[in-house]
Each structure stands twice: as structure tokens, then as C-alpha cells.
Length: 124
Image (cartoon, rainbow, N blue to C red; front, side, top):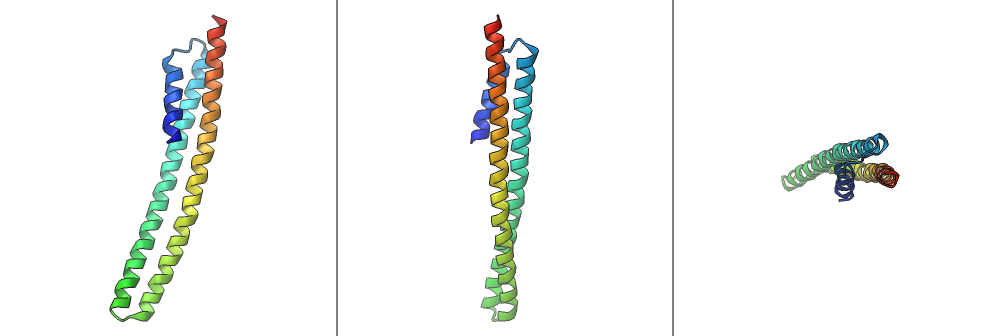
């Protein structure tokens, strides 16, 4: 996953012992952005999983009701499954967007940290 590579790169920059305050601060900011992005993506993914589970449960209920011959209840449950599935699909797209935005912000922060470390290394 991109987050793992970005976090590892950020940790490497920090581990290299950037001498200047600017490099250290930039590395810390990159690590904080990576953590925030991962946390936001995790929360969004959990919401998507819950909505998908609701869709699956409603679909299972609809199948059971149809098997029992209760067409009206089966139709209602199928509609609930459809709505929950649509919500899960929307949530999945939002999760992807959250991950993409977090990865971009983390990448920019990591690049800033690398640049600061390079400047510091050239300054010695």
C-alpha cells in the first residue's frame, strides 16, 4: 500500500538523523500526515464495510422471505438491500478519495522532509 511506503520513507528520513530543526520538523510533519491519512482511510473503510454488511443482511433477509413465500416483505427487504448497497458504493468511492487525498498530502510532506534533509546534508 502506498501509505506503508510513504510511512517507511518518512521513518527513514527521521532515522537518518536529520540534523537541522527544519529537517526534523518536516519529517515529523510527514509522519503525522501519514498517520492522519491512514486513520481517515481506516475510518472511511470501516463505514463502507458496515454499509456492505447491512446490504448483505438485507439481501439475505429478502431471500429468506421470498423462500417463505412472503413476496411483499421480500420486496421491501430487497429495496433495503439495494439502498444499502448504493450507500456502500458511494462510501467506497469516498474511501478511495480519502485515501488518494491522504496519499497526496503525505507524499508532499515526505518530499518536503527529503528536501530539508538534503539541504541540511549539503550544508554540512
